[in-house]
Structures are given as C-alpha cells and as structure tokens.
Image 1 (spheres, one colour):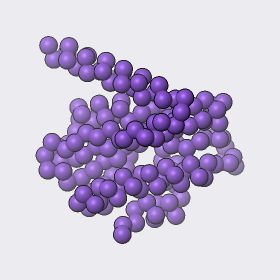
Image 2 (cartoon, helix red, strand yellow):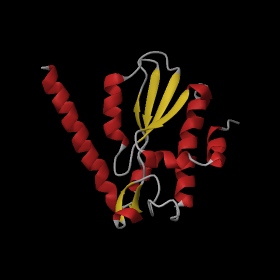
Image 3 (tube, helix red, strand yellow):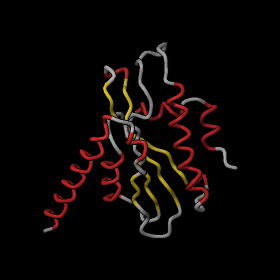
Image 4 (tube, helix red, strand yellow):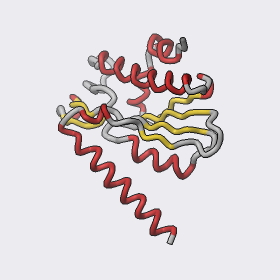
Length: 162
C-alpha cells in the first residue's frame, strides 16, 4: 500500500514538473514561489537549495521530504525560464544566461546579479523570521549554480545583514 502512495506521489511530482516547465515559452517561472518543505519541529535552521540548469525546485523538494531533519526548513526556489546561449538560445529554467564554458568568455553579469539579489531576498526573509544568519545554508549539486556566488563582492553583499 505504501508503495502505491509513493508511486502516486512521484507521478504527481512528475506531472507538476511538466506543468511548471510548460512556462518555457515565457518568463512566467520567475513568478513561481519557491517550493518549501516545512520543518516538522521547531524551525531553527534553513537550507536554500538551488537546482541546476533546466531543472526545478520541485524535484529536489521531494527528496528533502524523505531525508529532512525535523528542525530544518528546506527552500527550493525555481529559476526563471530564460534563453541559454550555450544551448542554442533554447529557453529553460536557468539562474542566468550561460554564454560560454571558457574562462575568457563573456558572462551574464546582470543575470548573475539578479539571481544573487533573489537569493539574498530569501535569506533576508529567513533572518526576519528569526533564523540567525549562521543557521542558513545555501546549497546545490551543480557548479553552475555556485557561479552566482563566486565573486567576493557578491558574497559580502549576499550575507550582509542590516
């Protein structure tokens, strides 16, 4: 019986992912609120998890449902749908445009700043809700997502609290 419910839940996630990706023709994805897995005990820490290129926060939230620590709130934001130069301009969920894999190639500086501001606003919301900044973790499994945070200037801005 449990397997039936688990498979039904997975099917729901798959279909929801297709629904979310149906926004690929526009930038409507940026309007989609982050997927949140609430803490089951007193909320004392937050994990903000960034998905990789072409993915969504929905699939990752299902994994956190399974392995969650009871005091942690998991926040899985969805990247907006943008054309990605490296993929021939195909529109897909991406935190910013990837123009090249070369170290000397141009970067989407404006897109990187916009993504960093969005993540900073999520961090600020968590701090306002009473979670100390040293109890907020930013994570991902793909290196391109971390590119948002490679500059010292962005890191200082991101974790600055007012």
